[in-house]
Amino acid sequence: MLALGQQTNNTVMLTAAAVVILAALAGAVLLPALLPWSMAAAAGLAVVLYLVIRGEIHIWAWLWILSYGLLDRPVFYLPMAGFFNLTIPRMLFALATAAFFLHFLLRDGRPRVDRPLFWAMIALLAYIACNASAFGWRAAMALQRGAPYYRFLGSLLFPFLICWLVYCTTRRQKQILWALIPLTIYGWYALYIGYLQYAAIRGFGGARAFIWPGYINLPNWGGESFGIHFDRARGAYTMVYPQSMLLIFLFFADLYLIRKLRGPYRAALIVQALLIPPAIFFTGLRAGYLAFLLCGVVWCLWACRPRVGRSILFIAGLGLLIVVIVFWSNVTSEDRAAGGVGQVKEVVSRIGLAKQAILIATDHPFFGAGWGHFAEAQFYLPVDPGSDIAATIGRTLTQHNVVLGMLSETGIVGVLLLAMVFWMLYRESLWLYRRIPERAPTLLSREFVVLFWVALLSWGVHAMFSDPFWDVPSNALLWATAGLMLGYNRLLEPHPLELTPLPQSA
Image (cartoon, rainbow, N blue to C red; front, top):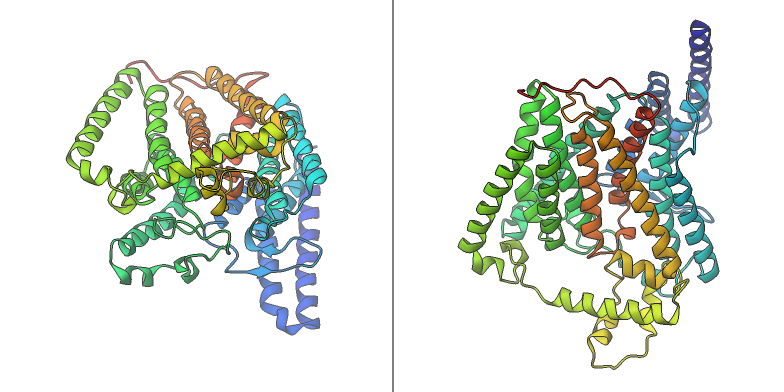
């Protein structure tokens, strides 16, 4: 039966490959100008088919995530009347989902919704979809016109779908490498851009000439409502938050891989890990500093041996204290590039935003003012013209806290559903952590679960100071990692895998 199944799959694969090649040739004959694109499409589909039959399907999810940092709108953008505007990340998402479902058809896998968490995610999506339908999928204000559908699709629906697809196709430990190795490869590019941007910020004007693609050097390449944080090392993104979250996750992914891998690439990962903390500093993001410190505490306490972890925390804390004392004038300054965290304008704005959220929630306690409609709701608030709230409204800011944003836009119902999703997600990871032996030397180890906790904590800290639902790549990174974690939790439930612990003396 196994041989028969393999033969059937091979026949289907050969037939599909023949159809792809014939379609590419037909397109080239009918429209010669499309020859390069048709050949490129054929090559891409051939790679999809190859990875499907090999079972290495997860790579497509991570390619989609990383494409936001290199191949976004300025590289390719095609407006489509009555449909989604096409960009390379969106086409990669469509390609990834098609590859996953092709994988379901050709291999011994099946879609499954067998965890309560997925039903909670469906409930959250359904509620927000109903909320946006009731209040409008397009906002009234020009700068926030696409907020409802953009934030729903890009930061909720797509990441949730990828999480489920990764979960359904998780089968072996090696898939951890298919997730993390591409991330580390992209990490070299992210560091390269970040270091050059910081050099340019500090006065080395020629540094930007070495940045590719060139659109990264445009202050507002993402559009009028994007393109912020040009005075910081924001990487290849429109704002600094995804760069910060990527670097934090990358640092601890490096620490995890350094323990698991041997050979030349391990040495390269050590070098990369050493380069990441300065790059996080270059972002000038106070939430990033805080997230990195807290994630370091979590890693030392739960991924390291108790004595080693406490020693690292003591040495790191002492070193940080010395640095703060020596560079106190820099730390208290308002110059982000010099390490200053003394800016108060943003603090005042967030206080004003918090007051606005409370006022909006008071008027709409249960269902909010509408998903993606915070900006217009804040604009029409009756406030004292001289207050800090009025000053914040004049700047037309989005809500900078995930809880207050959900409360003002979707009400108490939305906050409770979101809290339920994240609580159930953390509970799943805690179950997996307890199922794995303490010193398991395999790829699937407690360190992997702690790596997921790092991603979850970093997202949570950043979400306390920004609107995370404008940040598609960071949401995708979190939920793709969550899909892996959930998949391994499912695999360990019926009959736990034989994960031999290391000797206590090792």
